[in-house]
Image (spheres, rainbow, N blue to C red):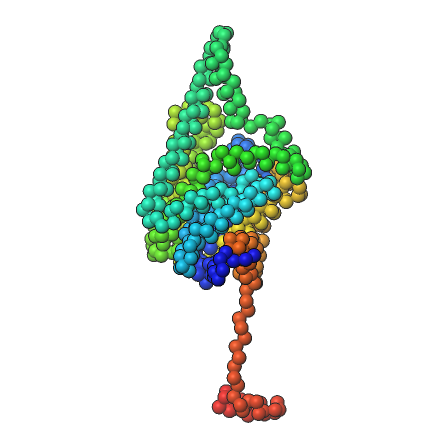
Length: 468
């Protein structure tokens, strides 16, 4: 590859300039995401509804634990740190006196390609790189924004997202109530008008999405266990809408968190600028509010697990508003806990290992998908829907251990993870140095008297000389 411009000296962020705390946070977020994603890799749709039917079981308790503390929070943390990465990339280019625009958009364009390949080659519908890259194009507009502006933008996006969710909820509820009125007319034996027939048919079609269809679940299991071509015919068309028309709506959630991450980084919260007492109090406050809100949401789900009955009973879905706050509170609580542990030295024996996982986040993220797709999909071992939920957590732990071992070993020989190296080389359109250079041996000039001693017998005289 040739350089972008003649004589340019563009290169990635130097290893010495990395903020270790951010790498640790990124490593924790990445490992936590696998804990949540493993069910999507290995279990059929609507699996949680089946688990909720059996309170007190091991699967129920584990699902509660993962949902309450990790689901949504780990991806939120990963999104937040992506926003920080945007700032760090741009800041490094400013220090070098070079324009960041071309390089940044090149970086995001290649990430878009990685995301599409991740989806359409591995046939994994839950990937985030594609969406993150599109968010990155928007985030560049906020590269010079002050923290207050970033928070204001974040709150605006959050309100837009909640307004859209409220609109969709109200629309579904109105359709349901209108259908119930039509049903009453039909029960009385009265003829239905064309409009009433449309109301009935539209709702009955929509209602299929609220209830698990055993036949479709069985079909989806067979497809996931089938050959590559059959699975591709199912996954690729299904991803068309999420990667095209629905993108503007799907971008709202990660952009909101990325803007928050940029603001927190400006304040120094993520780099450990504040005192241990500050992080401890922040953690207590966030957990003190966030955990009760999480328990409230769980209670709501358990009281009326039937979504259609919930629509009928509630004019307002308060969990829409609770979710936005509880997730951010618990995520900041997690961040505060990890930074506090780092500052207190509790992670001294583990910090470099976690940082290595975070430094290789792209490679490790794709590696998780490679392992899980091979384990569970039909073009691999085909264990889809064969393991119980608690058994999947054993798989997660094994993958964690593997990545925690292999990441620091890899980085002891190489500057970047393999995909990080590819991404950087494509971004700068120039092959980046990969192997770590061993330190140059130092030449030491020995005293002339040393060279005049030819025999081992004279070693004692040398030891007692003034050169000892």
